[in-house]
Image (cartoon, rainbow, N blue to C red; front, side, top):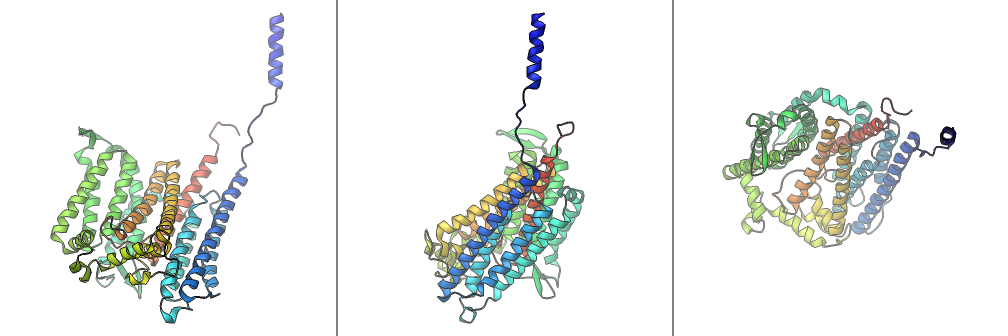
Length: 476
């Protein structure tokens, strides 16, 4: 009887004890915290760009021009406009992507503006490439905002996997159409419509990322099948080699017909990364690298374009190559610029980046490296690294396979493109014709990369919203 009474007493005391539960952060407070963080970083980014613009003017002209504030105001208004859109359309999106993209884009405009000021007639007027870059930035951000409005859920893209695949193929073929494609001295990758030039391959890389993500989600199981082991590697079945052979053939065709080594390497690298993430098989990467290297060596021995690129890479200081048309002059001038910058640089507006041909686009990394030094260049590369890391984090935390592959593919697109450009300028790999994301002059690349940022923002918002939904049967 006493035992029963004691148990009853214990039950009573347990039932009346207060429960201490952690107070979760309210969804509204979390959303506001993310956007407020983004706003703070965005203001800091605009301060950096303003300081850079003023330094450029002081270094080149020796005085400040208040009209530079109009330049900054136009860019800042666009960036803050996208921030406001995110507060309403994607309140839980990643808070770091927009400020980082704004910083890199602003530094690119600053360097292009600095190169425009070199000419005596342009010292007090913002014209030429810098004006065009501001217009392209406005158009790119407007399109990115439209993507945020139209793309409510990234899973919709998976329904049109093969539509994106067909669209990417059409975009790649457009420069080959007579009367539409534009041939330059180095490559045939541009089209011209009503006097406006555009590089469809930049948009094609986004369409290919969507196509690869949708295809690999459905074909992942068959591609993961193992036929035999060789030297510790689990090799795929011979009948499953079709996709990588098709992509390899397309990339080799781009290299031969369009003479575009950079785009070919970008597309092929994108596919290898995504198939590795989808299957977890290192053998796919090794097979892919072997195919590309083998094809490149064959083309190098039979196609003069590839051979000249390799010779300029291996022997850039050879007088014959240095003085030849289309030789190594541009590469060597870029290396001299980087060497002149040293560790801390000459200072914005105080170097000679204009001595390098096409410094505002292909060699803008060399121009920035000369005036900001190795330290400044490493800071810019660190911004790229953070942007790619945030994109990979979005892919890692994704709730569905398609979203994970898409975020990973788009992030690696930026990473591969930066590596190809910086590697070419610093002579780590042969020089290609790709542009540095957000930095280099050119509307095609700028529009494509801002679309990538918009898709990653949408992906991060969707993932956080899905995580905030309680599971069925869970506590309310």
